[in-house]
Image (cartoon, rainbow, N blue to C red):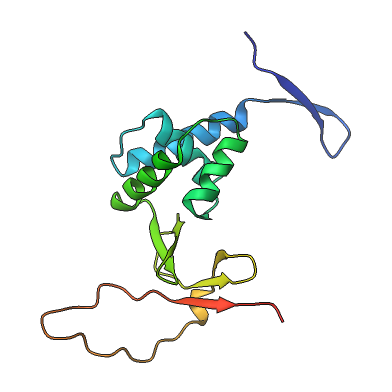
Length: 160
């Protein structure tokens, strides 16, 4: 059976056929490749969630609840418990990092490079802050027998 097609006009008014399935296939391929890069077994649920997270090639900051809702809105069925477990597995594999706000709310970020975040109190959303503008002049020494593993910077914002 042929994939559904849509016709879009280019800038010169000429029709160009675009396969309606192309975006979905690209998203699933990107998700499967992302999982393979960390040797994560590509189960149906993991590929579905990975496609929601990185299917368009953009980084995301999600909560388990927001990812669950987006997946449900896309017509997929994955339990909230599976979303939590999968996000934990993705973090353990190094595909994502967990950012905790207020010690109680966890956000999951697909950008695993060290960088600061803005937490928008009014909307309870997390976004990247420009790392090049952050200067940490000095950190305290770690206590005896410990070393600093990382420094997380979350800058809380509210609208005026």
